[in-house]
Image (cartoon, rainbow, N blue to C red; front, side, top):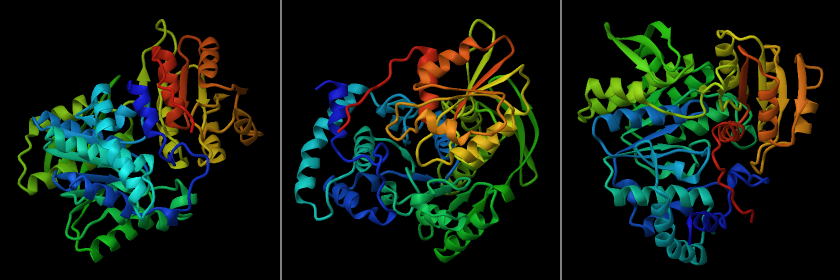
Amino acid sequence: MNFIDSVNRTFTLVDFERNQNLPAHSTFHLQRISEFLDNLDNPHLKIPTIHVAGTKGKGSVCSLITSILTKNDKKVGLITSPHLHSVTERIRLGSDPIDQNDFIDLVNELWPKVEHHNHSSSFGELTWFEFMIAASFYYFEKCGVDFQVVETGLGGRLDATNVVHPIVSVITSISLDHTKILGETIEEISFEKAGIIKSGIPIVLSPQKFDEAFDVIADIASQRNADLISVSDLYHVENVRNLRTSQVFDVKLQNVSYQFELGLLGDYQIENALTALGAINVLRSSGFEISDESISEGCRQVVWSGRFEYLSTINDSFEILVDGAHNVYSMECVVQEIKNLKYEKLIVIFGGLGSHDLKGMLGVLSSLDPILIGVHSRHPRSVQSSLIQLQSHNMKFRDQFFFDSVADGFDYASKISDKGDLILATGSLSVVAEVIESHKEILPELYQSF
């Protein structure tokens, strides 16, 4: 089989990320993946693990921790989701996605075990996400990694990644997202995210917008005798200086000041960097030697595409900015950053998935008085641009246009942009991915539908 054949073989498993009909939360459990991993001799339990959950910023935190450990000459396995352009991005060694030939070999090696499990398990067939998580653990053990950094997919308590026994757990900023599955309130969602907290294992907690989130997590940490490291209490930031592709700031920790350059933009990325530092300091306290230089270089050279990322300008005229914000709180953070920028006019390319609060995000964006270009991405759960038109009705947009594809919307945005203008693509990572593909002429990875 070639690479796409291998990918399509995996997609014969049920995929709740792409499926239009999401299951009730009660149908999620850990028994099925635990049984499959047991048949693989439990590779996930053999590697020191950093486990990261949260609503916002968990991918950035994972990439920062991985970058720091890699600069410290450690071999690091990284699991993230979703992917932008290729499924190989979900299984990484350091920042490098798994090689396509290695992915083919991995699928070929594991597929007889998948078929055996699906025919014999009392817990039913593996899902696509469960397979990808199990395959990642199996691959990391084969590669002999020193650490594995694992991002949860959805929630935490019943997420397939929650089979790990980490040396440190991390919870990033929590806000309302996936409410049909995780709960309608901050308390309910926080309870699900806090499900990754293990007895006696330190938990690093990002600054929280909602006191309810902190209270729920602190209570569960106390119940499980897990030391809670509050990033907002531990670190103090000052002297933030924004550069074109990075930002420099001073961090004070126990009356000692350090200066960092961060290769990610946005105030919220500073919070993510501090959260990563909190996790690294737990590793140091646990006896792992991690140099100050590797921390500094890891922060400076980190790469995490699609999050407040500038793409190169076209003919030195207008600028293109992409951010995968897909809930109201994340969009508020993006809009606050946009208000600090200088531009002639703003053109927003916006699209979302059916589970997103479209009206809420559009309301936040309308405060910028932009030209709105509603688009429909290739993602199976992407909403039609006509629904965006319906949701944005009577909102304060300078003008509105709607297209059946991201590529057409981006093409039109480019045509109406002049020197000094800013194009912002946001609303979902699928929109961001397709704008990047259009701009950089990246061939999309297209999958069969089963």
